[in-house]
Image (cartoon, rainbow, N blue to C red; front, side):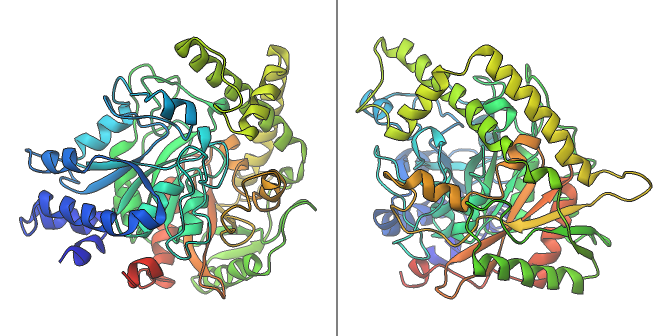
Length: 481
């Protein structure tokens, strides 16, 4: 019975509770049983709260997801009175505890979710593999010698291993989409300002970070975004509300969309993977058969190499600010033994970013973002594109260790080719599990929408879920357990 329950998506689990066929306690017990079976292998949940979750499941829950188990990433989505270590050794050693719930956590709770634990993440979420020195690597349920992606890798592993149907995730350069790609999940990065970062933050990384979730179905992704999106008091900006709930876009004919295809990296240092090209070819063929106008086309502004360096300077400045904040909290300097080498370097780079440098980079990037987004807008009597299709990652999930250690930075530059650009522009983008390589490793395909058009992405994703179904594919860790 437990395996049957954990194989269901959140929508199905919520319906069973609403119809009184299953209790919240049964759902939570099933999730905990699966966690106890597989978490020792995948190292996804680092702060279990199983007894608290059982007590909460027996309380008077309400909301559209009453009783459905959930994991929170240990970065953002703070939970009052619980550990919040952000992948760092120094916060772990200090036993740092969050003082209050974030607005996002409050929304998850109001929707009825029961939080069973917090999940592994790289230090400060600053890379795309979840292998922190603080807690060790998370492992991919499709092949435990491979990465789960990052920085939401612990959440993605939890969902792919059927512990929970929904995992909280956030994305500053691909950290929802890349773990979704590597773990065979759906991962939607919402538009800038769609989900509040309050009350502790208004924005970070020049507005490039945003929260969302990873799930196994498009309908869960849509329904979860419906309950976590929206303005909170004091937010510096917010995305315009949807015309109607995203769940009402499921199964709606998207019409004949104008779709551009980018199947190859734009720079020589990036990996040109045969399977990545094949994933896009198969997807393009399916989109054509569904009646869409499919062309080989992309925003040429993406070919400007300067954007990556300027974004790195922005992230470095924020890293310096974050480290400086905790130095003030603990009254001491943080360095070797507290921070990993990559973040020591980022912190030092951040020290050297002057106010003038930061603002000049920001102004340049704002101009560059406008030139990228113009591709989606009608110009000179021609219609703009509706969707850009790319691989999510330039290759399959890498082996554990490839993106960590001395060579990690160089290897990361090879495969991080398609995602961070759209954190800068603030556009919505979704990774769908449409391809598996010859070794059985999942490789997601990314769809980028026009600003604030998650509705178009959900319609198209729903259409592709029906045409190229992935629900029958189950990670070997689950199938063999």
